[in-house]
Length: 270
Image (cartoon, rainbow, N blue to C red; front, side, top):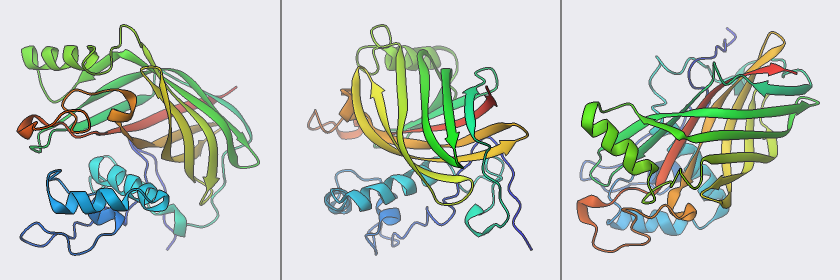
């Protein structure tokens, strides 16, 4: 039976990632990328070992894929309705051409977490963007995010307003001075008709770093649906608050450096 692909709020084909290989006592039994992505205790020996392994470029790329799959809730079938496209057949890539993002029907989600395991998530609005397909491959593309639209979804009232204000402040993303964040695609490798491993330049607070991402681009008539996401280390973009890379003895006030962004974009052929 052929596998059927449908598009939902998030499109990622990393189904094999996310298996927690911890023993009952919490120690890792295997130090592969997906096991390291499950480590929660940033003060533990497992974290230190995994941090060393992440200095290898291939291990780090695999780690980020696993982290993306795990953090975004890859097992939540209400949000993910794509089957394994790597084993599907007779898939057609998107038609060649430039596709402009429809900001009214597109969505971006962010996810962050404290060392204690307390998690927050919210939305960001897409400002504009495009993707260019040539011969069934991504030739170029750009995503521009309006940082002033950052909202929190897991709280309400005073707590929600306080968190949103803090994230927009100089302690974090300083949106008054840096209102936009951008991701410019510099290269992409197709692993199937739909799946792309992407390298791009992420710019936050005026600082640009190379960041890997995974995208799935599926034809929707003459248009396309784009899903996937990326994980970035906020400390590399001078987002210092609560980071163990800048401050010692944070204890339970430590905030993890990894931030996840997922996208659900509808793009129209120009």
